Image (cartoon, rainbow, N blue to C red; front, top):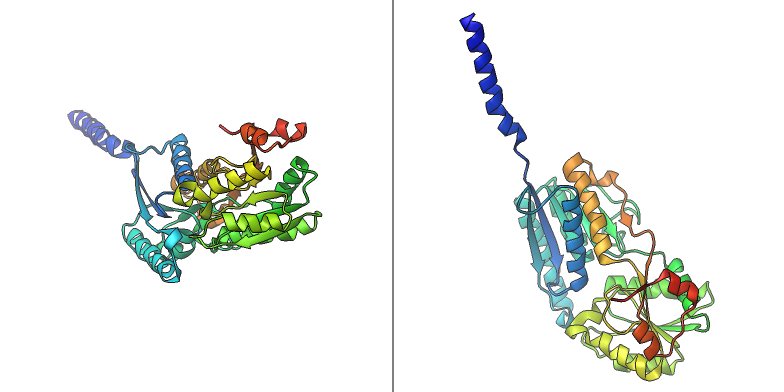
Length: 339
């Protein structure tokens, strides 16, 4: 009887000792790879990502450790040699990240995704991207399918849907101007707008500039060619020099009463109408993917690439009044005011 009692006591003690080990929560390690430190939209995507992880029970300081690597790059002074250099830096940093063996890597933007993913995936680490305008350009099979070890959330929007909103907002405008730089996303936006616009009876006059160029001469050139509205594409050019190109175009818009429509929801003053995907939302969608991979063991390639289904529409009432624009009630009912 004593032997039985002792056996039961030992069993309880052993189970009791084992329980804390089983109950101890796993700490997940996430690495983040990004190019350009002063990029407010990327910061919004990053915060959206963390917020979504927290909603799924993954909290920094509790069961989540996040290490963020940001490669500085002066895009205004970034010639070909410096661009090649930053790509080498991305690959080098990706190698360091892979060596640290995190549970998952978040890449913010096209460049770190395209040039950093391979070393990380080869090490058996899943990669989730956010703030990528064209997933195919970043190495995905299509706009909705990732590739082995890779998935994420894209800023890509259906250009026809966006232009339908623009056309509804400014029915009298048939000629639009786009000033853009050598950003991959900007080039894609300009070319797609011109191509799709032609099928909708819209003409796009486009002008490429260098990152160091002032926007003023290009804007005047397009005005001389008859553009009646400007469209701002997804382009880091508009954020350099403390948003100087954006501010200069806004001043030209007020002076000429030529409205600006922005496909980039970085709400710097100037645009009357904003149409596109919200960086915070895209970050949250990437967080949903990461949570499935970390908590449920999902393989990235089995998760479809996510995007914001309903385009966000914002209206700046003050700017609308400044340029004398009048938007139809159908658009105003759909839009949210710029804060």
